[in-house]
Amino acid sequence: MKEKLLALKEEAFALIENASDKKGLQDVKVKYLGKKGPITEVLRGMGKLSKDERPVIGALANEIRQAIELVIEQKQTKLQEELIQAQLESETIDVTLPGKSIKTGNAHPLTSIIEEIEDLFIGLGFSIAEGPEVEQDYYNFEALNLPKDHPARDMQDSFYITNEILLRTHTSPVQVRTMKKHQGKGPVKIICPGKVYRRDTDDATHSHQFMQIEGLYVDKKVRLSDLKGILTVFAKKMFGEDRDIRLRPSFFPFTEPSVEMDISCFKCGGHGCSVCKHTGWIEILGSGMVHPNVLEMAGFDSTVYSGFAFGMGPERIAMLKYGIDDIRHFYTDDVRFLEQFKRA
Ligand code: FA5
Ligand code: MG
Image 1 (cartoon, rainbow, N blue to C red):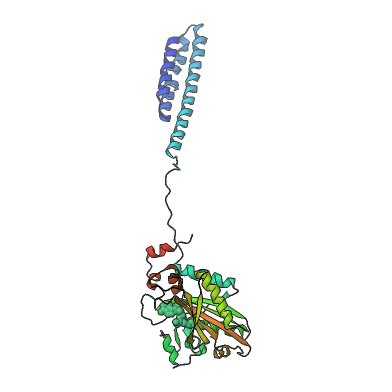
Image 2 (image 1 turned 180 degrees about the vertical axis):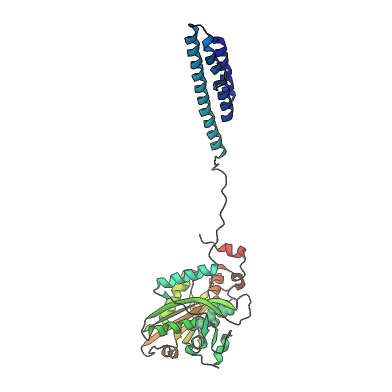
């Protein structure tokens, strides 16, 4: 009897050792410790044993039973640990693998240039003003000293919606709207970025829809030298410290005198090259002293107040700054072009 029990124990231990999962262990448990199992059977047959043998065999059977239970439990813990270990190993992250790059967008080059110009002028005490793109003839032309049938209207070929309403051809109407809001009291110190529209034929330097940034400074005793000073700061900041500027006489009906501003060529430094058409200078904006008629129509006393205004094309500025050879790149949404303007 004793040998039989010990043999059962060895058998069970071997099976437990070889069990590879929870189910295998459960089978061993049922087989050896279950109601119909051999140990239970031994315990049941105790009656047939002698009085001396009974306690010995009984104790041994219980001992073996407990030993099997214990070994099953230990094996179960071990299997569990192995499972967790395997799981951890399979989920290991190799930190030396190259990462997946996340595609990020970037600001449109025009947006960046406009924000750069805005920041610059905000730093000089200007604030930002806006006006409608669908504009009244009055603000776009008349109040800018361009009465109906004035020949200078031909300078800006327009998209009319009705006789009195058009797509604005420049950002100058925002000057008028802002001055009117100030009701004859200075200072007015604004820049107005926005879209404008003209019936220009699209080519490398012209678009039928483009951006402008208007500037206006009206106060007592504003002079042409103030305009020159501000524009010099602007040019050096945008194009580099060693840029020179030049003001050239020009004509706009809403400014008197009118000047166009050139900067010394960023490519050749003013010696003459293909970019500046061998003149050493590149035109970037129109400007001048606000015409007394414009001040008066907007409610300002032109004997007390004076001002300067300018209007620049940010596409042209971006083209000069980044060496872009065709204005249409800004509007054809080619990602290969746009991706070159990621900001650091
Ligand atoms: C004007 O529009 C005036 N309103 C500027 C001004 C404002 C003068 C205040 C005086 C006082 P002009 O038509 O030259 O001026 O246009 C100004 C700038 O807009 C040009 O220097 C150029 O940079 C840009 N521009 C003009 N037409 C186009 C076009 N078709 N496509 C792209 N940019 C253009
Ligand atoms: Mg011009």
